[in-house]
Length: 534
Image (cartoon, rainbow, N blue to C red; front, top):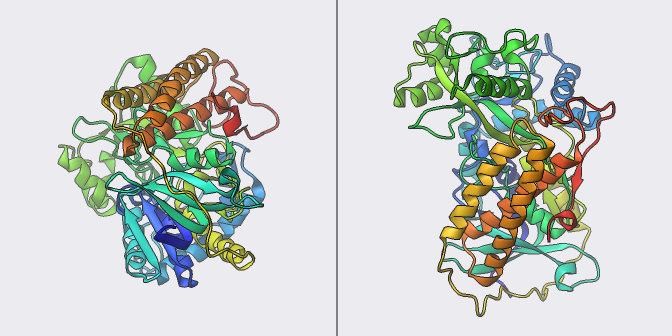
């Protein structure tokens, strides 16, 4: 038996994970939340722009937000799912305010609505330029003090436990997860339901805006349990990441372009002139490709985002966090253009789920970036990510509660404890470092912003060799956090490559020079664990 048992086990501590834990505890459910770093490290907390939601009904409407989302997603979205999230946006904002989250207001006391790429109206509710920090600080504080929530920081999920896998029940369902603890022992966390809310997979690429923890763990864990991954080739590259030797993975928010920032070459020429009618406010896939094409053609290492024409008073007030970050490396955004490059930012694909987070495995739910519901399509509209996380955090708990009340759970379940008898410490950890770096380089060079059949073939050939090495290593040596991440990263990389090979067109974030045209019918790609290399 295990000392860790709960109604709900949450894996991940971004907005969807923490939010769901809080909603579940408020319903009287016991919750264990594991996160492989601290609750202060997640993609949610890094979000600068805000939450897209229809607020000003005099100029905006649900139909406009839906249309903008589908246009950005190049028709791969599911319209009914888009409407589901868009219509729940205002309620999610209201709930956040009731929790004490302070969004920036205008002189009339209403929301100071921002505008970002792909949006036809101002509808981005924000808290300065540190929206994610403001939200997570409040939600995390409530979760940490709730008596029904136990939070385990620096704990890494290893694998889910299902009744089918261990033949401990007649019907397949999830019953818990093996978790690596800070002392590098593996504990059994038993639970009647499990929520995967682990975020994205930015660290599969060499350059990313994501924090160090985003190695696609939830996707790999879910696939090994039997879930399918949908549209994993749709990796969004944010157009503007700070390019500076003293600062890495620093996002420069799209909100700067929303307020009038202009992308320019090092020679001072506008990058987006003649590329798209919306110019600098074109959807992210178009802007990222335009920058990538210019950098490859010119040989330059970066382009500039020029804000200097907007004035110091406005810039320092509207973007205090970005102002301070840039000043720390010697850039005054009121007088100096900001050097930027594209980098991996968001996973628009994910594990197959309903908008309420329900999966094909009873008792297993997903929420946030890891979930593929049909909202984002082939390219996420700016600031729809926090919208998705906020809505799913609440809606998934309704279904978790329903599941718990409609099933009987035995007091004892014969789940085997982790067994690593005969396993030794690795004498050559350099193998992990080498393969980690090689995966990130090959994904950036072969499966990046622009792809080709030959590059994808090379990537698959190389990932096969790396996967064989890692599999042998995993089963012969004691597991560590780095080894778990590397194992997961390999599965995610292979899934992205296979998904890209399946899509015989260029659409949104997936651009293949051998299939430059868009097919008439938008269809999802799907990859299961059985399709991956042995």
